[in-house]
Image 1 (spheres, protein in one colour):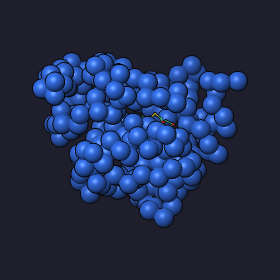
Image 2: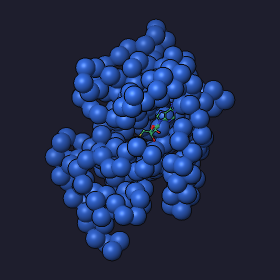
Image 3: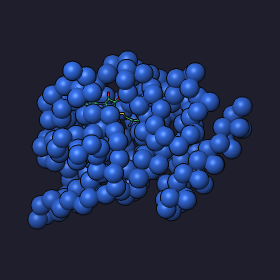
Image 4: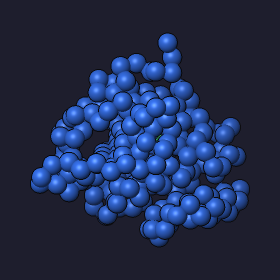
Amino acid sequence: MSDSYRIEREHMVENQLKKRGIRNSRLLEAFRKVPRHQFLPRNLRGKAYTDGPSPIGEGQTISQPYMTAIMTQSAEVVPGDRVLEIGTGSGYQSAILAELGAEVYTIERIPELLEQARETLRQLHYDKVHTRMGNGTLGWEEEAPFDIILITAGAPEIPGPLLEQLAIRGRLVIPLEEGYSQVLYVVRRSQKGFHQERGERCTFVPLIGEYGWKKDPRTR
Ligand code: SAH
């Protein structure tokens, strides 16, 4: 069984990532290595390597593999980077970052999801992932500054506290609401200030909290 997942994972890397232009070999190697199926609820593992997001419970999703790859590529991770992730979800993105040699700090607001993600990361021995329950739009002040901040949920605007916790030469990657979907933005910080680049369209579940959506915009 584990072998058939390995083959499916190789297909994912070839057809979903390489064919769409993901070239960085360290990044591709991380996607070959992390067992994505283990981050999904048992009954959905058979579909772990399909080309889309999958439900992980509590109305949340694990992002499409290609989206995880684009976010990671945009962040330009180098070993030793301190990374803050907002929205742990399944823990899969954290595992990819850890494979790339990052020290990962990840925050999730839904206790049930965080519990499950912690268990999965523990079983797979991702010791360089530190987790915390709470509202990630406030960041993780005690551990700041961060070389990279990844927000894996769609936001109405960039949360101010996260900009403050970004190191000089740091990169912040965030899906921002634009019309009916979102656009991925990369913000770079230099001595002179912040510089913002617009990337591709994407769809993430909403970032909820003080500096995000005040309540889930999908419910009324
Ligand atoms: N990175 C995840 C996918 C995350 S889905 C993975 O690889 O599986 C987005 C997650 O962000 C959801 O689990 C949601 O509960 C969480 N979230 C939304 N708003 C948040 C906030 N303010 N702080 C922390 N987590 C938040």
